[in-house]
Length: 398
Image (cartoon, rainbow, N blue to C red; front, side):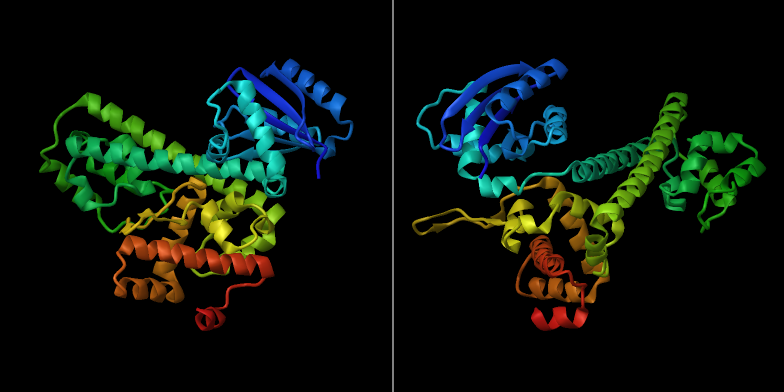
């Protein structure tokens, strides 16, 4: 039981606050600027109503990046702060018949929500270490999206300057990306000396054993229908350089978040990666989004948190098509999809489960969602009981 419940409505330049006591009485309502002065004034007001900062529960809605500074500040001061899904606050606000909406009203609504749901909400508190791990994981995810988009752009331009190259080799390898920075078109290859082309392909550090020769590329360039466009050559070189930079950044992020995870969640990491098919680069983002497994009373809570719980529309005799709700954590949902895809390919237990679901009439996509559910149930049990994956036990219990 806390003594003070603080709801915070955050915007870009300011934030509104409302404080309630344990009986629901309003103690204060105010607005402050989103800077050091505003933070200090807010803390002063809070301290006037509760000297023991550990007896305060503060909550705010997720607002992209705007709430992060205030969230970190409250944690540093010893105030337990949580970030609430805006959908929960929106649904809670609908219980009131009044349609008045202001920043101060929203702050009070958040305070009332955490007062009525304090036991569940207090479990959402995130340490700074876990928040840092999530930040790294989500930044890596963002970089991966950029890499995918950049690869598509490179292929699009290359189909104009040297369309035959893709049939000769895989252009996404390190050696070919380095090659494209020197020779972004068929024209550039034909103008170069053969020995220079051979030298570029054999550059040290390329790290890939070639399944084609420089002569294959030269012949393709000589018979190419690619257009002559110096502008597109410059564009392609720039996109290739961008892609290589993004790939380096992903490697840095992967290394850093792995080290951070091993320092704080080593046993959980070992438990999750004990499942064949789940590598560190997917296990770490999973743990970053899930946090402490004790926050979930059962595996169904974890499924709902990921937004993989079924959503069914039914009224009278009408029964709509069942779909996943997608109301949970989209980052967790994405990494679970990657994990499920991987275990289906590399783990006989999950592959057999996937095949069984398809034989029962499920589409490949629905069968994969079923695998995701199965994976969550198993991981939840493993992390709860601190046990490692055992293929024989899993087969018996399935």
